[in-house]
Length: 513
Image (cartoon, rainbow, N blue to C red; front, side, top):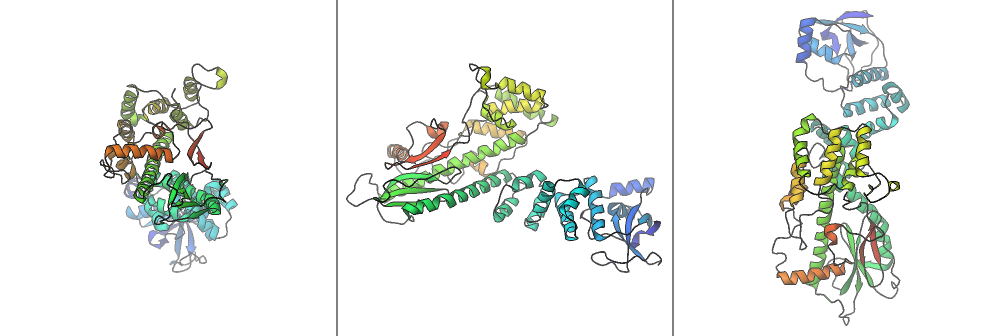
């Protein structure tokens, strides 16, 4: 039944998933010029509308009021245009049917935010609908609906603030990688800011460390005594054990004969063997030991800092799809790429998700495709020339995972390649996090001041050499070039008793093509 109903008798539906109608001035101007050319869908109400919109029809009474189901924005624009009444189709619907109709209309017009969609889905479920009903009505998969509903488990105030900052569905999907609800809500506060990728990576690393600790600490407890920093017992360093995915620790063969101790830090444990006072081998003063442990912690922290920075750049490069508006910045990147260096195959492959390393020029075709063949395949397969050019240029400019703004003494050292890379990425829209900026400009707290720890240069150099021996590193520049042994493992250190701590290397270093 179509009735001309006064706008003053129409009430907005409190179950409407769409909470913000947006700008109405342009819509009202069109109505003024062309008239109101649509029909609203409404349900009758009993007297004063109830909070949930319940009520029996009262079509026969002149003071009957109606609840809008479809047309909230049109009704508001008509009122702004000065109309007094609009044509309405009066129907009878259950609350569940009303929500389904409103949800469907708004989704077809792409007017709902993901939070509004989530609220609409939850309302339908509360009214008795099933997930299967939602998939049938919306055309969305169970997974997509589940992702929307998962947003409602987050802190509401933080979620709405993230949306106001421009949070996207892809941001929320990335957030799902975090398992801990508290961590997830903490990282939610950075969505819509340059720090989001950084905070996400930090949270994922924290969860990986927690999982490794849960796996490895019981093994350490089985043969070693946990100690604190102020423990006065004399001890000799055995090894440093990183709490990372894939890391392991084995019970030493002489655990029944020697007294092992370990000290737990945030991301690693340091293993010692207790020493008799008469044993002067490997003796070190308390000051030396503390300095050594502080240096080890700084090295680990700086390595993690630069590693996370690389992951953040790599994530941007992988998700970047240049358009015409990026041509000027892309031109600058190409010019920089042509001035020197070679294309890093690992960087190029990471952008396009290519797993197998490229074939070298001297290898047979059976070894896989070459870089040139990959470029041809990507272009013929639909990748845009802009994206392929960007990937080639970036794979030449990116200094790599092991590029660090630090020298052997943990003192800040400017890295021209990193500075250039960030400048070029910034022109393409990349926003460096606060951690990355402090890493580049030398203000990060992990850097030592240029005068180190007040030792003269000769003493520092000599003791640093000892540090590398204690930590099981070769005399080569392992920290600079990312070398690893032939089995693909980085050795965390090996004491005289044959204990190994290692983690599997998940990158191939600087594969040059």
